[in-house]
Amino acid sequence: MLEKFSTISIMDGMAISHDSKINMLEGRIWTKLILFAFPIILSSFLQQLFNSADIAVVGHFAGSTSLAAVGSTGSIISLFINIFVGFSVGANVLIARCIGEGNEERVKRAIPTAYSIGIIGGFILIALGWFVAVLLLEMINTPQEVLPLSTLYLRIYFFGMPFSMVYNFSSAILRSNGDTKRPLYALFAAGVLNVILNLIFVIVFKMGVAGVALATVLSNSVSAFIVTLFLVNEKGMMHLDLRNLRIYKEEFSYIVKIGFPAGLQGAIFSFANTSIQSGINSFGTQAIAGSAASSNFSVLSFYMVSGFNQATMTFTSQNFGARKYDRVKRVYADALLLAMLFTATLSGIFWIFRYPLLSLFTSDREVMEYAIIKMMFMEVPHWMIASYEISGSSLRGIGKSMLPTALMIIGTCIFRVCWVVFVLPLHHTLYMLYVIYPLSWIVTAALVIPALALEMKKVLV
Image (cartoon, rainbow, N blue to C red; front, side, top):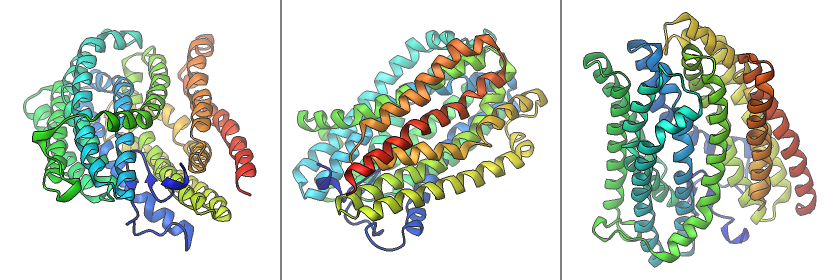
């Protein structure tokens, strides 16, 4: 199975087919890793623009309570969305495989199946967001003064889920054929619109959290429309006929088989972060607002790791399939060094300029100080994440997919939940809560790196 897919790059819902301009099997590795990783990083940065714009506008023009309301919902949104976004990875893998095999008929069945799953998943998320929002917000100890606004934000936000899912699945379809630019263009247009609408709804119409949620919904609708238009105007096997949408059983089964584990892992990670959010909520509105502000920078730092993470998996897979085992080892070493270097540089910039950067999101001095506490534990050592992420991607690249997933769940999920439940109550401070981040990174690295060494010793011979 691995050799059959060795020329297909699977990357978080993105695949590059045989026509990729980057030759991963020959030449200098580190330069090609950079060229491959940075377009992915840029796309991730643009996606984060949505949430950052919401937080910046609401923090300045609607106050700390509204900022806390938006910030307290992030882990819940991720919890639900990650499940369905995982299915887009399955769709991408299926279509990329069929393109590589020249199986046009199956491509024509897979595209309407994937698009339909996106629409159905979006409407399921509307129901979950509406009926489960209050329950989940109460479960993570959202303060009563924040709860009504958080509920309002979530319910409006989730009404845009069909648009968000359509964008994700349509982008996965386009990227499966090597088209990475047009999804980026659609995302850029939507991001600019989101910022403009945020300013209009919050400053002009005084809509507060409802305004930023509505702006996100409308922006998502634009990005969904643009990528759908791209697919409708495609010729040949990549053409999407909206009049003939349906789910084909065989294609659906394959998408679920590949996509569900990916979605489940994302959901489990989100659950662990939800437990940490519960701990943050116990410190009050200002702490929640500070966490929301600082999270913008930790997310961007992680995207730096993620870009090289996905590049590592792709390069490793192709070279392993070609039996270039020395090159597999070199890919790991180069990617690990690059990921650590670039992440440390970006995190260092965020830490050095923390006060002016945080002022983009809040003018409240107390909120800013709470944000700095979190940044101290997350930004300064953020490069450590690369140690287990790059190692995990190398394992996946050599065909060991479940092993890194299981180890990462133990190190970054179970360990964090146990810390919040059993350790935090013994010394209830933000310092005790946030130290779980670097500790969990160390524990996870201690599990994944030896596993990689053992597997490489067994298979790279």
